[in-house]
View 1 (tube, rainbow, N blue to C red):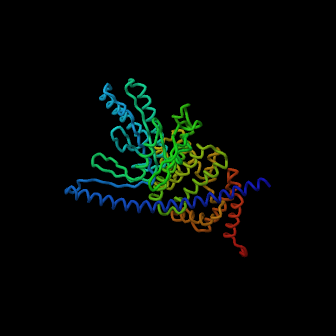
View 2: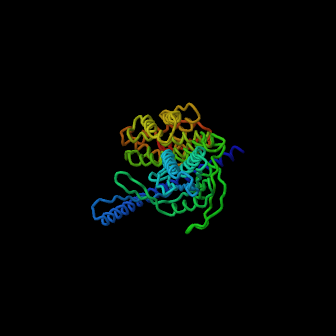
View 3: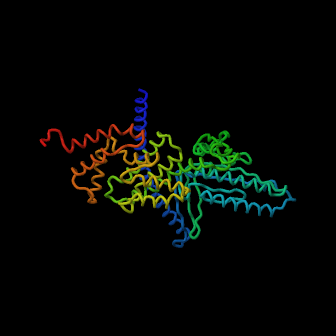
Length: 470
């Protein structure tokens, strides 16, 4: 009885996951349409700005301006405190040199975390994440950069003589930004919008030697960092905005006692968020480059497999890193179809080895991803739990209620390439394949085995309908 309840609960979870997946797919399609419209608007604004610039200068092509809008950027203001404490006896030139060295090292930190330096104003420094290349991890990237800036300043203070005291206040806010690129040989970016102003306000509301973040940023980084509530400030058109001091990386995902260095668990959690960016790039590649005759091996199938490996993976109790590897393998497992139909698994591995180093996957992780991709080759022969999850997810449709339409799409795909004959031949081949097929994980068996047997009976009736004189 208890086992039956567990199965029923699992089925309900699957139904909710599928509904959620369908909603996500609708949102993705709407976001794509919105992105195209936004691109058109940006191009019109760019052209208008170019014409205005040309008109103002009176010289064709003299001004180059590019306006881009980002739904989520994270802006950092670092206010260096030091010159306010100057006295006649202090070495002003020496302090200016130190400030230049400080900003130079800030530039290196910004580059390390793939942020964009916006500008320096006197003894203030401004940078941003998520522009000009959008990404999902920019709030975490900016907070990590802030920690390194603070640590470097502490080191600089310890080396300076007693007359030089450097302090810092850092304010961070996440929100929509408009980025304006200017220049011809060297592009520089200027940011506009409320997000910039709020980040500045958050910084000015910060105590000395603290990193102060808005509640927008807090919601996006709270699973990574220990944060302490720091009150509210009134913001025009927003209301009272909450603020938090960031005290360090959460101990269980930190390598050191100070909470400044991330460990492997931090890296896995980070990559699970970063997967959203990788997925967007690969799905966009599939949409643009997959041949039109791939009615089954299309973007929808890839999304289906990604959903299933995560669902079955959590149900089977695998680790966060295993889920990451499964989702990544599912994303690439049919990507090889962009260059060839046969041996597409090997071609998918080639693409994984091309893209994954850019997302800091280790050689060991990439090898495991490729092993999971190759496990989907026919006939399936999985050697471990992760490969079993991968195989079950790839053939999940065999036990789904939409088996017939999905099966027909595969038939049309194969028929168009001359790999199968009549629908009768296909149905006989299906019976042989499905009868010999097995689900390897307990989760998949509980979810799909009963319905798979029903599909076998349905195909048999299609081949030999009741009342057939033969």
